[in-house]
Image 1 (spheres, rainbow over the protein chains, first blue to last red):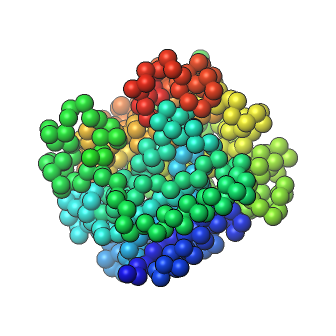
Image 2 (image 1 turned 45 degrees about the vertical axis):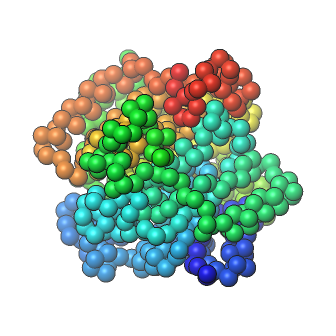
Image 3 (image 1 turned 135 degrees about the vertical axis):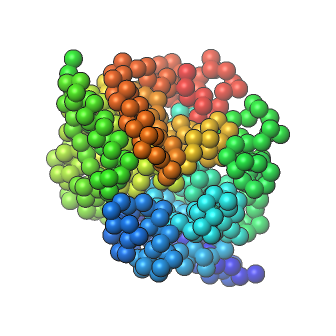
Length: 256
Length: 256
């Protein structure tokens, strides 16, 4: 069954490992008969900084509330064209792949700014103008899958359970849980290439082969079992229910 | 004893809570006799996107390695003037305060891009061109304190130990541990104002009073006890030592 996949990547160099991984994913998906949409953030000259110029017709010219103006701009059709175009790609896709180098243990600013600007009020949060009623497991991006695929300069050991940087999946929790699961996406386990500063031709080929294999299971894998807001684990929409053992706290407690 | 504090803030609206908190911190510090340097990222039109134009004289024009070109630009004095100016402020300061609204559980892109571009190789990482020899507790920003001060739209319960978003200090670990402690800063516990979307005049005043009180202890508080790379907890510089109980894993294990 043919699907549509949206690949967003963030590196300016066409020879970069980031670009090679994005190209490999695209080719593998197309070989399976899927349609691929891409957002080459550096190539597009993506505007990273969310600011007043993104709201040409303000509800309140005196004081800038991003949520209120974001919702107003989207509802009134006055969003900048670049934001609207990215929302259209997202909504046309069955899966989103984010491919980027890990910079200071999170996304490069250009990709953070893609989320800041595209994740509009009424769509990605405040869904249907119903406050926090629909989030974490449902919302404007429900029914879609998400795969975060990163390259790290440092070695895998640094990102292990007792690694000096902290585990990669915990470092990326603000993205996977906070930005992707929040508006309803099903988030898959990470794809990672470690030690990118010391790769050989063989290890690059191995990384590409792993990406090709991963693309074959994109629509059949089991997503991370993050607890849904409205699935019984958060009866008041804020705090975990008593049936979750009291010893479970912190971000690791969010995986059922 | 008079100190120098560098306050970096990220909100375009001069009436924003972010600006009010930054102004309050500045006034309180100056009242104590300290000198305050500020970086108003929106006001400065800070360039958030780290890219090829930041390296006017490339070591390798064929392929862009950010670490290699970053180190080369800094050593050869060809860094853009805005980057060099921010590094000078950082190095002139005894403490850094970052004040920002939490967007998608991390920094607004403009602030992430401030770190991406200013945290140069040879200074913030690869210190003294010695690879990973000096990091996490020592490095180019050693001897300085750092305070992360955020405002969140959502209520405090959502950020509690069993809150639906995850605990705020764990969400910000990539910044506090990964970007601030890494190059040697002593990181203080977070300063936070929750529920910014529903503040009353009284609660804004309470938030300002809390910030004023916090400024009085900026140089006397005990920093977060993150484990230092070279303090005995990471004998191979990658993985926690055996004397740390085997049940301790993940980012919470990084606090001694």
